[in-house]
Image (cartoon, each protein chain N blue to C red):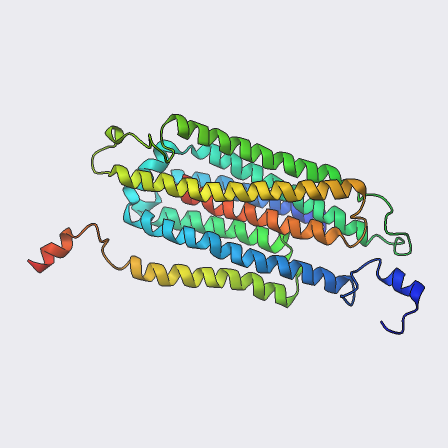
Length: 240
Length: 104
């Protein structure tokens, strides 16, 4: 590096940040950093799921009754489908951003040579699917609110409980449901924020070169949020 | 990786989603208690593997990424196995009936 002349340095630094040897190393560092964060997220959700598993084992009948009575499996299934679709569009967006980088004959071109093909539409469709997910989730919360199964002053009517089931165990299930899906929805909102930022930058054409790393690691985050829902859906909605 | 791969993985994920809903309507617990939950979790794990390996590109990632990604799930496994090892093998504290019967 020290022997590089001034004009060459400027050219070299066009495709990777100066602290990295090359673009490949920068890409590996970016994805490794995101995976480190995601590992802490696995344990964050994991602790809640461990607690949920213990209480589901203890009060299985109450949890099954509450899941049947107050959660709608079809809304959960539609939401799973929506998130899987959004994961596909994210994967395609990352592909679009990366393959723009490595397109032949463009290495000598200036960094801002336009937008990767389809990147902005794919990012917008992803955000739209994320919003659809949150709208369906919000509708579920609203129905729960109307049925008085949201934790609060009018939380749950004990007179409706069938014999052999403790109303407090149903309240426990609903509390787990709201904490788990609420934290997941918060992650979705953060994801929407990240993707708005990505879309804005992609629109301005600043992802033309190695900034596709940003698309990739935001994509990793989005896939992870999808991953959490893949486990939440059967654990909460499909208790038999 | 070709975009074709992503469409194939997506088709598998949607198929597994239908499978997990269908399996939940079958009463598998009559064959073996807890079989319904086990099947649902196995399908979820299969979906998770597809997402991690293909959508999250771990399949083609370097060894260090493999180690970091695996570590997350290994530690989750340790937390689940050691915790449940305790809780699933003792009586809940709010159900002392069997204990009092034994000590009579």
